[in-house]
Image (tube, rainbow over all chains, first blue to last red; front, top):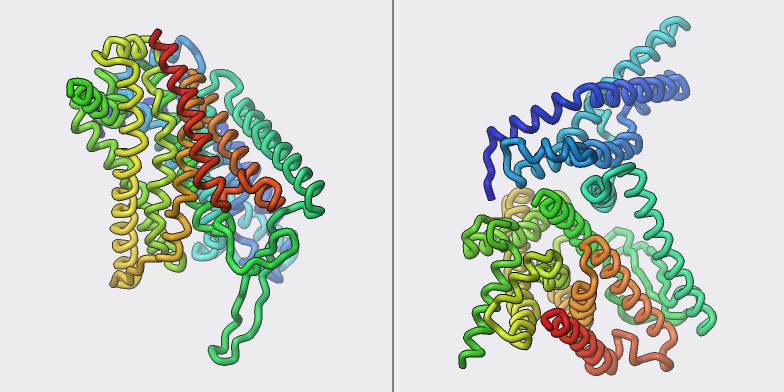
Length: 279
Length: 245
């Protein structure tokens, strides 16, 4: 595998230079929307809990990560003329893929967070002026506090966000036109099909046993006086009868690993697909 | 003896070439041996990274036997690679020219994907995860509080899961023999695995009626699932034979 850092940086710079207008427009719109969102946030929260609401809007940011991952990577492949021209870039296939990967997974997410930070300060500044006109003081956000919404997220949340970005990224390689739309409509259809099949299977289970779910569980907590701590116990029921063991599919670790490997496979698939396209 | 030699050569090719066809490298250059090493490096680095993350970021979910699970699932995921050469016409033509019979080619695939890859994956991923977990422990606590989780190991590594894994691999073998588009292969593969799992779950709900399908029952683990695997493998063989005709 040919890999040269100088060439990679050169092509990356070129990518950002040629798409500069599009990037600026996107950044500008995102900045404006987020400024308004943060300004409205200041106004609704007011001065009572000032500082509490002043943090990045993680949901909007993540949505944006997923959207940009479906728009900007492999943008050259959408048009035949540009696709042929991209073949002539003085870089190997692996380097070109690495550039799009870096764009979708590191550069654009970081840029989005930076833009949201700027919008947060701009919105809060507008809020400060609004409150100053009423003779009230309003503090600007503390830097240590603004990432708190991301910090609250768990491992599983991060995994599904990465998964969303990976699906958009895969869609960007697979489809040529209306890439983002096709990707997410396709994903929606697949998820819906899985849901329908699951529902049919559960219906048969209901018909056969009278229970919708063959397995259910409940968690009970009690206070252990010896240790002075709460103890939580999970009991698994099989069609209403309590089991003395916990079946494997109630193990969170297993599902975590399965989902990780599934997303890794999708990432490998996007590389294989790109490789085939550029052969 | 000659046949065995040819099979071994093909196995060697199976393990190196699908990941680095001449002039078309996967994770390596034209030198197939070094590319095979790099491919292993990339695979093992994932459990290593996850071990590091688990013990660094999430010091609570400290399960070193997780490496086994990574190994097993990677083995199943690599089943998508079994018929990789058949995706492209030029590579397919190249495979026809390999000096071996269809039976030998099929045997080589079975040895590579059902014996060698599972073993290397299980050992390598466990080791990778273990080293990652140790490194993560050192970063968090300054010491590696390593403990092998036997309970988890027993849950993951038993004949029931091996039987299910083999069946999923055989299903993927059959799908990759028939479908020539990677995306459709993945969608179909995941759908079939999900369907098998749901059917099994359903069977476990109506105990006494469909034990043969319930993967927690002995009859499913030792008789029905191996039989289904065998049927799927026969299907793949017939398809391979027709493809070479």
